[in-house]
Image: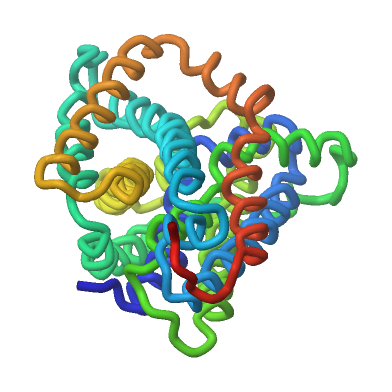
Length: 357
């Protein structure tokens, strides 16, 4: 069973943008202020180029491991697949922790226990153990949910925004914009998801161009939301950690109708739960391509990875600020290395199949 082109485009246009709506707007506003749209646009343009390169690789009709083995041999391919899996597991940590923080802070009236988020890891282990083709079917279901959630948040939030707060442009200067750009790398690695999925979908006419345009369309929605977010909170935007849950509460009808915005918040949170589990599934796929698909390996890998992340999430429960600082300031270079440089360099690999010793 293969993923259809439609499902790939749904992921890029509808699912991927949702992962940028929790902490990222406030994170970029912290350094760039009213210029936060510029680092957003820079990240999307850079990542769109990487998405284009990754989708072009599908033309060769080989999966990720086969592409590497075709040029470097099986042993080198196996080593790199292990390294890439570790990157995906590391990349999953930040969205997982911010999702945990969102659930504990927004969906509970009182401070929840440390284990209240633990059931997510059962869900993640289930997703990670499934074949990649199942993710395509999930994207079919989540795409309209993401569109409905975003549309609802936009409708409830837009009337409260003063977009004049975004001027004058370049008020934070090049230093502020570039600092925000550096701080945002931990959220931008969508092209890295495509590589483990190579071989599960066929390259159709102009897929690379269509995928890039879909990714940019989703990015335009995120940038529009970031503008509305800053237009509402302005100088206090850096204190609004859960961006998409905060903008809609100023809708005038809420005083009469109640928190109807929670309907759309729940819809987006559902999409985010899958988005947080996706790098784990992609990482497990890398390990399976390296070690084979024997009967119990998917379950063993997925349970082991989710158990390790559960332990890490408990150990960092009160240290999220330190994790955020480490990812944004010390380890930010890991994300463009694996999600931008690797897809671009893979275009230089051998194009035709050869006998692999």
